[in-house]
Image 1 (tube, rainbow, N blue to C red):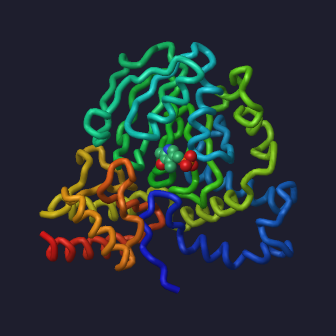
Image 2: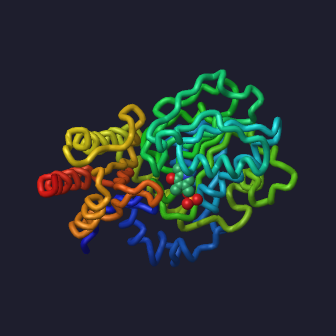
Image 3: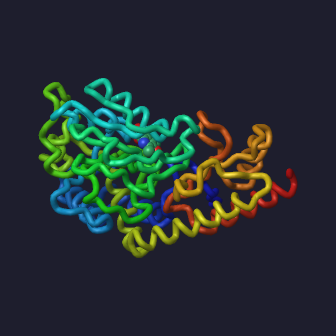
Length: 360
Ligand SMILES: *Cc1c(COP(=O)(O)O)cnc(C)c1O
């Protein structure tokens, strides 16, 4: 078996521990005589799996009791609609900070259902920074303020949250969930598609404060109403059973690694190795202002498109795959989620150093 170092932005690497356990349990989970894929979601065995997953997630993220954890389908993109359909129903207003393509898509979707407003944007500099806001910038009547916490494509992250006062803050944490501790009480709603840092594609985790449930617009499809899922323990219909099981294995792995503080220290170490190299390189340079850099997604360029393409091709041949930047920005991007070992980043930097010597 020859596993590559996979720098994909998503779907992306999963911890070897998780894959091994899944492989061991592939044909028979416990003494159930069947795989998790084949189980009824109404079985005792499966109920225990989803309950354990939720309990472990609550423990890892320190999620207070007045928040519901939902395991949904439809990816991050379905949340672009679910958030306004459920939350933009008091004053029909919401404030959005546009820090890239995902935030912009969320904003456009919200504008279909109510009065969505752009409060700040970093489009002027290709989303290479996080715009600053003050409490006065937000509409006091807004039903929520929306941010994309980590911008997967552009490699920026909100290291400081906007001060929204009493207005609920909603955050897309698809590409930074479980990368470091987060104070859930600062948010009305958090959501993450699993395929970046948690599990295979197919489950989206929503963490929502209870008072925000139950106020969906009248025409909201039953399946897009958070209340439907909150009232039924994410079992109104068949949940993405196997993805939830794998997410549960990731939560166990995080506990074993020492929790989110330990995960954070590891992620900071990896990011430092890469950013330090980029800051000292004569050939490669990072595209994001230092103070807003993401721990998870690191975009960089050589300044020459042909050389970028050559780098991506040679890196692939050397076992460092999926380093091509997003199709809308070009260049390169190394996504270094939780499952990427420090060694993977060290070896990548070694390879970049050699490429620099040969091509500078
Ligand atoms: C990948 C991604 C999405 C889109 O997720 P889908 O599951 O493909 O709909 C949304 N937001 C962020 C921050 C992402 O990284």
